Amino acid sequence: MKSLQDLDIFVRTVDSGSLSATARALNLTPAAASAALKRLEAELGVALFVRSTRSLRLTQQGALFLEHCRPALAALHQVRGQLQGGRASAFEGTLQLAAPSDLGRNVLLPWLDAFQSEHPGVDIRLQLSDRVANVYSEPVDAAFRYGKPQDSGLVALPLALDHRRVLCAAPAYVQAHGAPDAPQALADHACLCFMLGSDVHDRWRFWDAAGQEVLVRVRSRNVANDGDAVRRWAVLGRGIAYKSYFDVADDLAAGRLVPLCPGFETEAVPLYLVAPSRHQITPLVRALRDFMAERLQSLASAAPGPARVG
Image 1: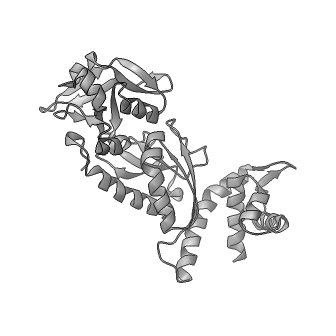
Image 2 (image 1 turned 90 degrees about the vertical axis):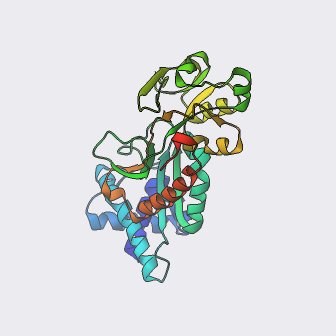
Image 3 (image 1 turned 120 degrees about the vertical axis):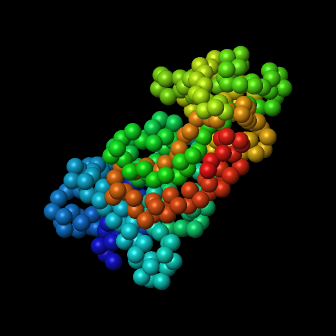
């Protein structure tokens, strides 16, 4: 299907920024890849790229076409696989994803490998950062995001709605400094805080058995703008952390961290997979969501006490 290949060449060229790299990946000559783009531009009647001797840049029309082309191409690849006798779950294409650093490194990476093992035709481009990715302007198909998006224009697919934080520290810290018996006692402890921009997240919320909110402003011993750095400090015994359970699940299971104040309910941090529009929720994105949601629920079954995910 030459038309399908032309679309594939267009999307791959945008992703790689290089027509020659696209040609190598598809085992084509650069001339054949260039002819495909010219053929596509002729069909559409617009220029998709601004070309120079060193670079390719999308035109405004090219960016608009890409927005609709990527999900359509993913769907066409899926249908072709079904028509050719492939499994209904067989996908092809590139998934561009963004995720928080801690969640990405400690939870998602091995699961993404497993997803690709099931779907070997899928390539993944993963951005790991605790800065919230702008899914409108950045090359991202979908982003893993804690907290319900405030932007009503975003499409948010739930992954773990009842996921919560867990108050935790290393056994060595507890042995040296004792364990707080209530959140109010955190004022006497060294705490490890996350910082987003210039805002330090040093106000930690809990709820007692009667459902009354307990808001504590903690003393920040160490502060980092990277969630994984906060986790590592906690494992090293530098202080107490208030982390998303998924980010420290392995550490809790291995005994590198222990939960604290089990009689108090912790703050909810629901996890979503968000996309800029419904056009971006391709069958491939939805398959990834289902794949991840199943594993997150399995992981959550071991969450301690009130931090348990339902």
